[in-house]
Amino acid sequence: MATINKVTKLTDKRFVNLYQADGINAKGYESHYLIASRSETVEGLKMNSCVTRADAVNVYALCEGKVVLVRQYRYPVNSWIYELPAGLIENGEDYHDTAIREMKEETGLDLSVIKVDPMIEKGCFTSVGMTDESAATVYGYATGTVSDQFEEASEEIEVVLADKEECRRILREENVSLNCQYQLMHFISDPEPFAFLDSFLQ
Picture 1 (cartoon, one colour):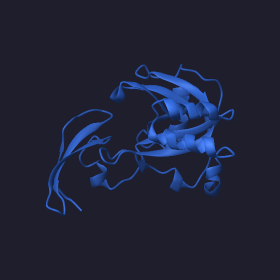
Picture 2 (tube, rainbow, N blue to C red):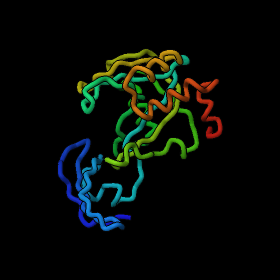
Picture 3 (tube, rainbow, N blue to C red):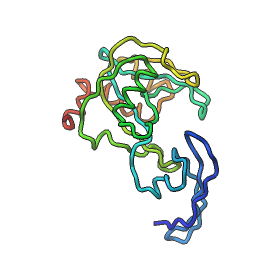
Picture 4 (cartoon, helix red, strand yellow):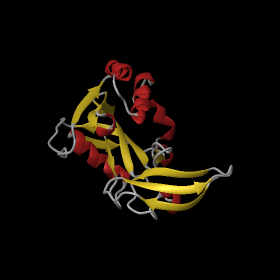
């Protein structure tokens, strides 16, 4: 296990920052590791705080028997990508409330949350080789009318309600986020919606 001797904050941004961790591992290898984080301070990094609270939430929801997806433009890949509705958790906000809020903002739909065992919805690390960001997953049913009236000006989002055939096409032909890929595989293969949750329902 590495010993971290120094951590330096390299940027000062609102939503994400870059840090450099200088350390040495058990083999004697010295590293200068770059870490992206939602934290605004060195103290808030998960390596220091040891707090695993989720930074963001993903929402796997069904609407009229179809999966609610967002097709969104993302700068890092300069392309459109299919994702689950998602967003950052505000300070002091319960991630279930975040899920409801983000579903409304991104799709115009209202979310009814399914209560499941916390162990399958708690925050998990998204790409631990480069960031300490963690995201929770909330499950539920969405109702209402799709609308873009609640979107932020910075967002370019198309709402997609996908049946199994369309999900197969998306997985074959489109850019898809990893967490979205896993949930689409469940949707396609499970005989009943959310069948894989049966062992975890409260």
